[in-house]
Image (tube, rainbow, N blue to C red; front, side, top):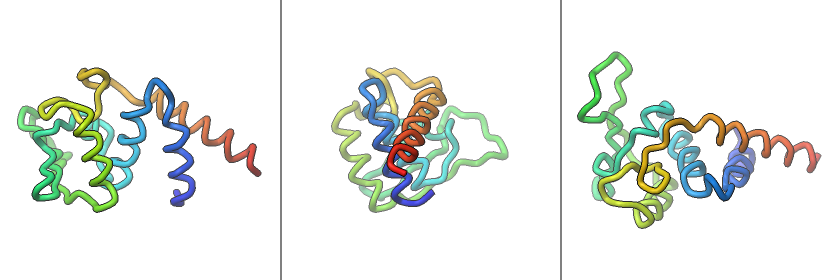
Length: 124
């Protein structure tokens, strides 16, 4: 995706229902390249703002061949994470709805992509 296409998807993802978590989900996925489940299960203690790292390996998760690992926080992602941390709790999930873990993001992401495609075809 081009930078412009990503911006359009993020803009379309800012719906009243998913205004906070869906754009952040897209940004984390884009900048870290991690899988959906790794992003949805991410908790704030795994995000180290001082060291600029995210440890996607959950301490309670059974080890599998799909290692998640530690990644540096890209400079463009850092302000989005700082804003999200101010909105949430220090111990909860990074992506949440009123503190509860988000079960799945497929419907919201599909709706944002559909909305984005409407925007593209309308502008063309």
